[in-house]
View (spheres, rainbow, N blue to C red):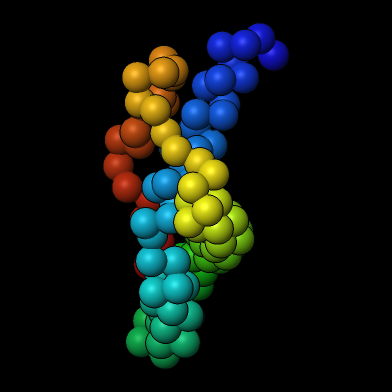
Length: 102
């Protein structure tokens, strides 16, 4: 890894920490739990079709909560900041359509 790759990786980690810090992951996970409880009753076929994707995103959200907790701790302690003019990064193109679940 060269210096530019190192700086880009560091920059992206800090940027992601700041972005994830803003998410309402508790509310998001509560909505997933509600869908898991209600969807099999309301539309069992649709739930069966979407359950795998729902579980994938739930797993990501649970992992993000761990990252969010550490990000919040470091942000509150003023250990991380982002300097937008310091590093040039290559961002992937956003998906052409949103990821659908249920």
